[in-house]
Amino acid sequence: MVTTTTPLEAELLALAGSVPDPELPVLTLAELGVVRAVHVRGADSAEVELTPTYTGCPAVEAMSLDIERVLREHGLREVTVRKVLSPAWSTDDITAEGRRKLREFGIAPPREHRDAGPVTLALGPTRTATPEEAVRCPHCGSADTELLSRFSSTACKALRRCLSCREPFDHFKEL
Image (tube, rainbow, N blue to C red; front, side, top):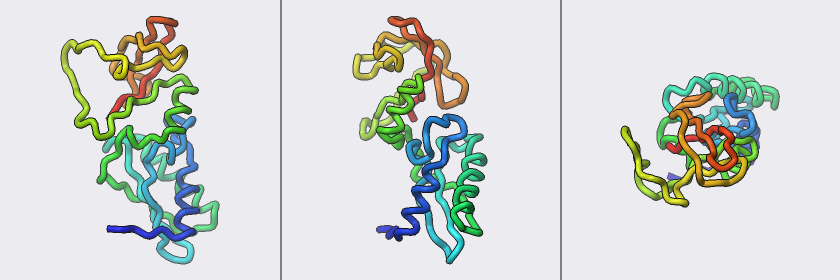
């Protein structure tokens, strides 16, 4: 199915996408890849499709309210934000600019795995990552890092430490 986007819908999509992520304000919702579409429903009404990073993401309500506020400031009277779960969001949806911003902010971006098949999950000890698979330190770029905790300040990040520069850092986990 081909979807046609009007110039107004494209403009509203850019505005909705410019909203900062409430948990990672260094990223916009467009860079995070969670704003999927905007559909104009009348002269002053629009519906925004938003895909959460995971089904129980606590930031979805804040994202929705911020999108509604920005679009109302642009002149819309009625804004509906609809959660869209299919296709599911993936860390591959984070833009190159978003990955750069994460790195500059001191968070290791998720490794890309598009078209590489399912993400491997392990419950016990894991093999050593190849240099291509390693999580690189956002401070010094070293691939010599270790996992300290599978969870960090948010459920989507893990806490790691660089064994070269000894700095701890968050790693945005792959989904």
